[in-house]
Image 1: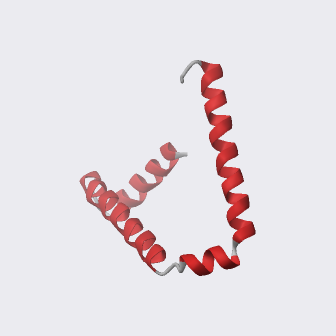
Image 2 (image 1 turned 60 degrees about the vertical axis):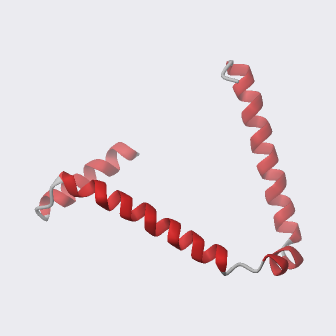
Length: 82
């Protein structure tokens, strides 16, 4: 999918007369903006309210996270990676 995305970006940039040297700064800018958005969301989160009202959702997410972690480690052991 990344390959196709890069081709589309190049075609669009070429259509508007932009060179490939512009992609580096735009990539850095996009990472910065994502970090800023995530920080803004995190700073506005009330953890006490989240734990109080969302215990079931937090428990399900913890179980899913642990399941994915365990299965990944087992799969890596089977493949001899870990």
